[in-house]
Image (cartoon, rainbow, N blue to C red; front, side, top):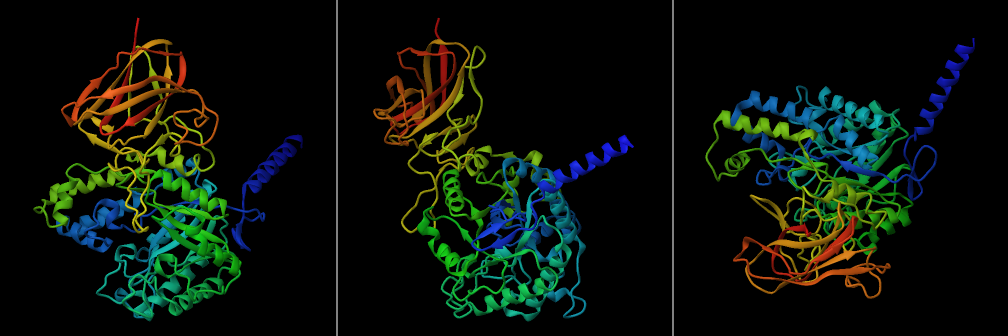
Length: 604
């Protein structure tokens, strides 16, 4: 009896722990989203674009654009059967439980799934019986698996209909739209199929608490009143869009009364003219934000809509920028009680947590698909595609920890963290210039150009001009010997956390390349967080107490013979460094050169 009693007690205790971890259905409560306990819940999510729906730019195929056009080129090279095999393996390799586990460990509490309708149902023009819906198990099974992985990590899943039947706009790649066929807005059959799909999904997931909500139509961009308004940004009434979202909502509510329904305005989610007032008591208003300033003014119209309509906001899509921009945008959202979902988890670029490596000879594939090179043999093409499938797997991706650090730690604090463990001892005396600390602009580094503002007229900055190695604002290029800092301008600086195994006297050398004289470096031992009165760097950092000790005040940089010709600059001055961890700053009094590495040589 005593054993049975203990077993019951342990079972009830475990059950209570499990229930305490369950957060319940998300719900719109006034101007915020709350969990099942009525607590404010800030969604911190990642969109897994490229899995169900390839957009050409993600894999350097922007010249093709839509997924169906990418598929056509692959068929030309390897045939129908191998193309089918390729896409089946793509869906298996791109996003797995390991991806979701990793995102949970990095800090994400939700996933936004960009869905392609053709994994769930046939296109209208392929239905055996007009007006009927053939349901395909593939998409539903993939969604079931993803939801299971999310549930295991206590993450919410948000379904996002990224590609609707017919396509919801004039931006063709985002919905895999064929402009030769009727769009969503030009076909009642496409609308009916979309509504039926949402009802089918809602019925399937109505009782699942880890289903966070339904983002019912991604980025509509259509001129209803004026066809010349191809982006839908000038639309004043949006009557068809509002009615369609009402119709989808009504269909969902027939089978699911609990889940949040997320709405998006015209003009890529941001034009809400004519959309309000709300028609359901559990709606969330999504907006998308790219390439503008991270000020309250940049989101003021959405804050006003929230206030007027008593509806929560969600930054449903953002990203594609530098770490500085990420930190500022997320901080802006969270300070205004707005959750967010970033775009996207992986592609052939460094502005996401995971980078897909380019296969060997991939350029030949790009050249052929853009009509700039000869057709590959089937064997050549298949080898490239097989390598691409392998590179898709998270175990073979390049993880950019600087990106996730900027999205979480840096949002809530201003400190720095080593990018790499830098140790100076008998076996290693050199640190690479590109391995400066992780942290915000003006805290871990200072660069005069740290982000892109492509949607802000007159602002033509780009962030990392070289586009390699790290997503911070520092400009980095790469040659056969590795990455290096380039385009150095007057007043910029880099900080390094370095562990010196031995204290004592050191000579310091810099590996540089310059095509002219006149550059100048200062080396500092940065003893505390910078910015105090009298600090050299006080004009570039926050006003916190600091002690900056010059190690070497002026190191002239001479012409090395060219901007890609490397030479060593070693000042005569010997510096005294303490044993243990030091914070070293390299300050560029005058720029105009490239920097590869810094070497510390112990003196007897």
